[in-house]
Length: 92
Image (tube, one colour):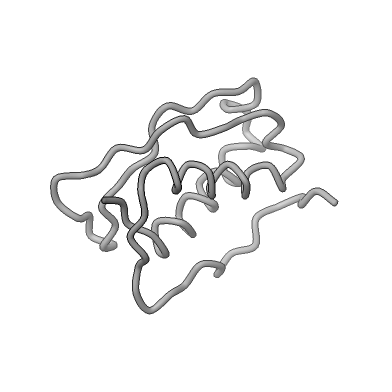
């Protein structure tokens, strides 16, 4: 069953797990696939930041592909998924 919207508050963790960029993209894409509005959209890569951001994350998404990536319904879901994963993971 596909999810219809993003549930806020998910992904709050005491510390971040460090994983590879490829692992992170796979996890994010698996999550995006759960939402009907995301269609075939997928994240192709993330960029490691030189310094952690104000939230403590050391990466940002880049390389998004798919038909729905610019739709008004997709963007809030994508932002919520990214926010959740930024709270839980850093990349090495």
